[in-house]
Image 1: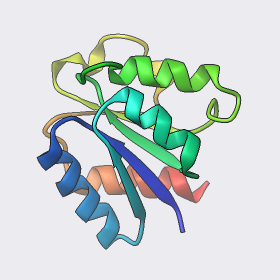
Image 2 (image 1 turned 30 degrees about the vertical axis):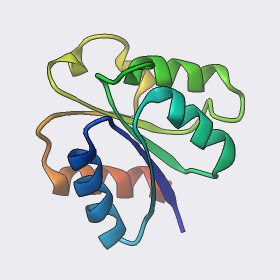
Image 3 (image 1 turned 45 degrees about the vertical axis):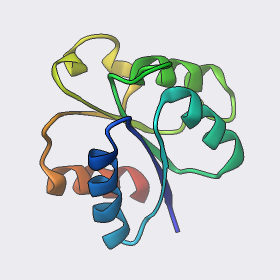
Amino acid sequence: MNTILIVDDEYLIADILAMALEDEGYLVEKASDGEKALEALKEKRVQLVITDYMMPKLNGQELALAMRKDQALEDLPVILMSGAQASQGCPALFAAIFNKPFNMDEMIAKVRQLLST
């Protein structure tokens, strides 16, 4: 079974997304910021990361950059979800970028696509 790490400091968004993904049969872990996400990635085997952009400590882009520097995490797909900041930065770091508010069906379809390969 695939495990997805959701990284977002907005607990309501993380919880709603987690419930939707769990309903689809995925295991979900959550972290509230980029630093906690990196700690979780050391402890748990995860197949996909979905991260917010604006967070304390490490933002979504900084998290993705840190992952790309770690040989064990460099190929792990990352989906970015963001407000206005999604178009900034380095889109090549991400398997997909979703603007908030996003369509849950589209998010789940992208998750399925990324985890089926």
